[in-house]
Length: 236
Image 1 (cartoon, rainbow, N blue to C red):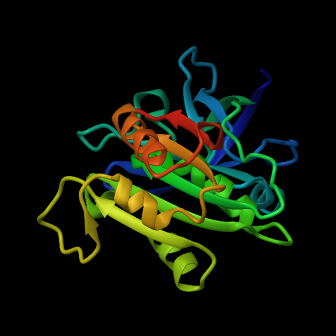
Image 2: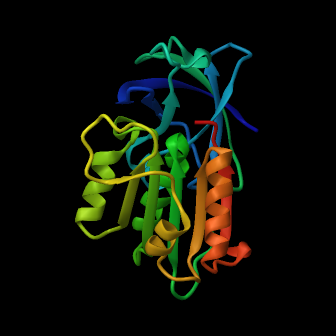
């Protein structure tokens, strides 16, 4: 995979445990497919870690930046592989790579995107890229996080739902202390059935292994063919 030296444009707090890391591509042509990932580390360091690209290719073409959703540790410090990342920090970016991407569209394209935690990153990339098409497909997004505060891109997702661009269901799996009028509990077959925009829809799933197992079983139980399900595991 090609290795490119790029610089950090800005770091923005996304949730208590994640940050949006926006990286300048400058004059470098950085071509990728929505859903792909990169290996990233501080410039010159042998340590690199994989991150799915959360921005869409159409956004990168317009802004000359890629965006990552970066996990921070429980003490509040940044991820150890890019712990000193700040505006101007030089990074070594390897890639892109990965086959977890949007399938080729058919006559009546529809997608069910199911995310857990930071698994929203590649699905956000796919969603934004699909919405950028001249004839956007029908998109339903189901998103779970441990607490309300851990729902990354929440404002953006709610705005897309309010404008009718996507159907959105968000659920909180652990925290019951923060005010929240939405769903609570893990993603189950009933929620998937409600969100599914047709049994011919492509279903793309990204999140922790336990969530993936629950979701794939749930999709099977509501009649979604295995061939229509794509998945990628995230640790958080």
